[in-house]
Amino acid sequence: MVRSSDVTTTRAGGRHGKPWRAAGAVVVVTLATIGAGMIGASLKDTPAPRPPQPLAQAGPEVTGPAATDADIPSTGGEGNVPAGLARSAPTSIEIPKIGVDATIMSLGTNPDGTVQVPPLEQADKAGWYEPGASPGETGNAVIVGHVDSAKLGPAVFFDLGSLVPGDTITVRRADDRPVAFKVDSVKSYPKTSFPTDLVYGPNDRPGLRVVTCGGQFDQAAKSYPDNVVVFATLVE
Image (cartoon, rainbow, N blue to C red; front, side, top):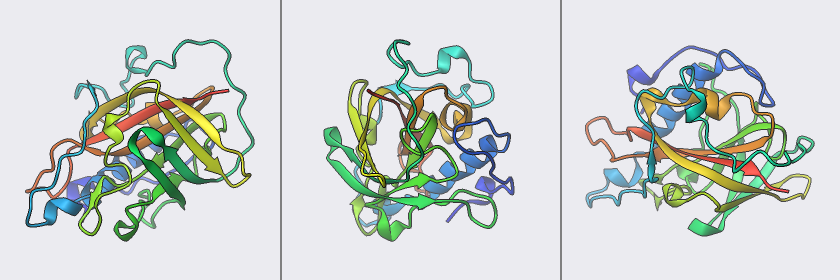
């Protein structure tokens, strides 16, 4: 259910948090695809509840390539940068503040180069973008999830926008090592101005980006206009 304006043929590239030129276009498509897929509860006869929105609303002028130092989320001071861990696939994500304890599936790219999202029938699960960094590695690990679905109603990240700096996210990995991240900031961006570099770009420390849809559901477009992005950093 992706609108034609959301489609591109740009292919993905890069991994482990290193810069890659195709990232910007692919990320925009990824999150536009998520938005179009997260129609869910809004298609029911009764009005769907609006997911909580973050306090920090990013302006439409903030884009990935044009993002400045002022746009970069605070990491709570430089201090000691935690050492990155060896690569290991995530298996589950826990966010106590919003009652999330969900299985994580690995995601790649579709044949047309767009990034996969969890199937709507599994909207209670999150998805990790496997070509990028794994949680705990140096770089930005990206985890995405639906905000709602017709079958489940509120989905895995329905309440993501209610997180605030200081909240904790724990990701369990295949090596049986849980890794904890502290939320640095939570922001909402128009999908047309998604901060691609801040989400998929390089990072000299182990970072986590958790993404879902936000804003008021657009009945005509059958999608959400915004993306909610949680920026978090590994804690020692």
